[in-house]
Image (tube, rainbow, N blue to C red):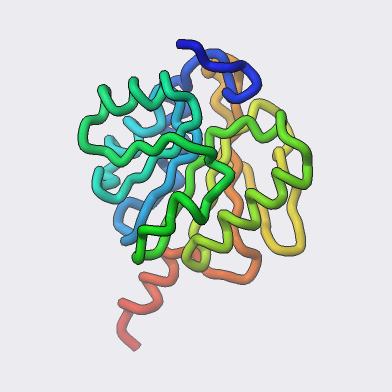
Length: 189
């Protein structure tokens, strides 16, 4: 692959342990689009499909043309878009249903702090209330600390990944999770 190291989170594909830890943060029973930013070679994509996320609900956005070709060959029929993953609105402009999860493999630590913060804010503005923005990072601290408009929690560390990686989950500070919302609306009074 001719991937530019500045634009990839890791020079090695995500391990299945890391990919499954990321995918575990997505509830496949919650309706809506799942947007994957920076899918690289598709390890997390495969884990999302294995978890039960329907292929027609996935949109993959990748900036490297070599990765796009690989993803289209590996996952025929999936919507794989070549472009800048930071332009969330552009990639979701043709979608009417809500976004129930955004998974990001973007190398946020390579970006200026204001760009990182804007990405989190843009993602959370497109997500249904309480839905997760899942970000992988190769550091012990979140790439974007908790802010007034979002909270962040660790979903664990994949030690057996090269390099070890932490999964961070961002969400709106006042919203219930989509799973909790579904339980609230379906439980009898």
